[in-house]
Amino acid sequence: MTAPAIVANTLDLIGNTPLVLLKGPSEAAGCEIWGKCEFANPGASVKDRAALGIIRDAEARGELQPGGTIVEGTAGNTGIGLALVANARGYKTIIVMPDNQSQEKMATLRALGAELVTVPPTKFANPGHFVHTSRRLAEETLGAVWANQFDNIANRRAHIEGTAPELWEQLDGRIDGFTCAAGTGGTIAGVGLGLKERDEKITIALTDPHGAALYSYYATGELHAEGTSVAEGIGQGRITANLEGAPIDTQFRISDQEGLMWVARLLREEGLCLGLSSGINVAGAVALGRELGKGARVATILCDTGFRYLSTLYNAEWLAAKDLPVFDWLKAN
Ligand code: PMP
Image 1 (cartoon, helix red, strand yellow):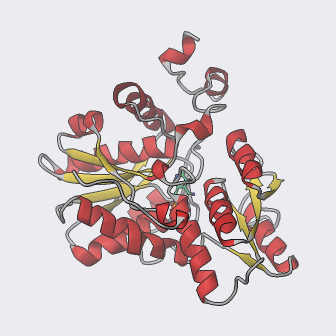
Image 2: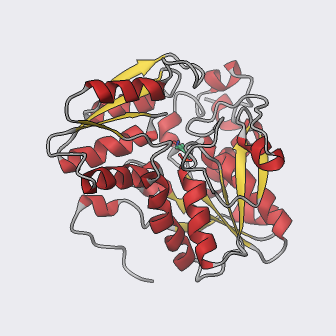
Image 3: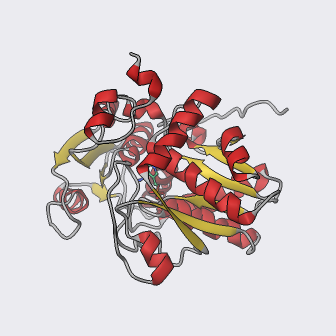
């Protein structure tokens, strides 16, 4: 047992997250399913890595000057990561979010000191979409930089240089498969590229929620979405710059019901309180593990903390209104 890391700089708390063997999923898959604990980052999500990578890149290119502003459109977690890193580096943050995201994320962003702008959710082609709104705001604000997480590959570089080598080292170079869902695609593409560099036989699988177009893209070559999902932070309808050249070998489509089943089991049986994208990732990892067979080692991402979704995933009325199964223990309260 080695002692936990000691760091001299708060930004060094980002990354180097623990990896945990998940008992229920391993039993269900008949092999080892490992979860990378990204909720253990200071902003409680995987997006702290992208936020730090994007800000360091903008600094290195001389775009972000002391006292400058970082502007971004985000489902919330990237904004939280950016706000924390910006505070530590002396920048201001302006965050544009669709107004259907969890109240907890909005309250958190305000608490961290970010300026929050909310817009109605729309299709990407609409100029009012949160991504386009954030780009315009960055152009109009003096000394501002647009983080552009979807098409700025400093995002996936954080996973090529951080998450992938960490997984490789944590599993002693014996890893058979990796899977996760895509929002920007930075995690799946970056971890995929980083792992393939070390062993090209590792199977990289995309796990897609319903309502996203990537499952169909990797299966048939056509972007086509079916169904819907309430999962926040995942579900992509286009090939972002971060997804270009992602080494995807196979793909799974996972329903919210199946993802929620794993959210419930991980909480009640293993004491992990997670968001829905983590549940969907674990369902995908179980599917991949079953394909790879007995003795295989599969890793996935536990993207963010469930504390961010108390008013949604962990709220009986909200679940019932969305026609989703209500967790048993919530019914009793
Ligand atoms: N899960 C959650 C909760 C997220 O906020 C995000 C980021 N959008 C993801 C998964 C997906 O990560 P990525 O953007 O790297 O594809």
